[in-house]
Image (cartoon, rainbow, N blue to C red; front, top):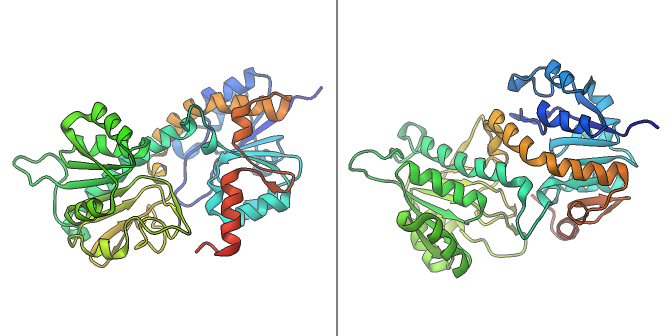
Length: 368
């Protein structure tokens, strides 16, 4: 009986050099007796050769051959030009974030493949597959903000680097999940005054236990948030929310009260108009910041891609356990509630509640 195949693809997105699995983790799948195919030069930009994957037991193949595998793996969602490879009966898994991508949702339905989103893998209320990227994104948000505070880039001319006698930049972070806490840790290390907004008193207790007096932790109340945003040198949005039909959390009037040269970083790039509506579109690694009403706006939807070596290693080590479960379910008839919950499309239907909801919203009010 022929072995079931797994294909690992090279990423083709702009500024995207990450790879989902490194040779060490590929070797694990080979030892599990899968026929593992890796697209040529999948990790060349990380300094990892095809030979390293071959030594791990993988076959080096073309992109088309990798797409023919029974289970296809990517880091990020397929690009528009890759939709032509979708086929009925195959399985595809990646960090999809398809709920914000109407074209992808449509392609998933018309192709009738079975698709899984690593970001929806959940355990005890947490999303473990995304932890590495979330942590890196939070840290990079502060690094980008610190860099853009320089005056020649339009910033306020403040050093976020624990300079003697200050002044110490004020950093306001909305959200205390993996992204928000990583941002707080980095900002504290750089000597900033940090305020974190959270949704309930339980979160306040958790943050105070973790950070002690190094941060101020406040309940997210509109009036309090308005005053803190006005005083902020850096505002970091670290919660993933959809605001198609809900009021903005930080509206344009609130942003207009910020000091000229201050910096906003929308890390999670929420869907719809978003909780930071002064962002009309995303920015990029090549052009990270946009000056809008004297405030620098940064909204890069894949911040960890700026450090692909670090991100790939961290994610590969973390995600391999879920890839093994996924392969067992898809290719060997195994059962796993965890894997079932991260399925987003099957037999021409969207099956995850978030995608179903966003698809309905897109029908009523197309995503900009």
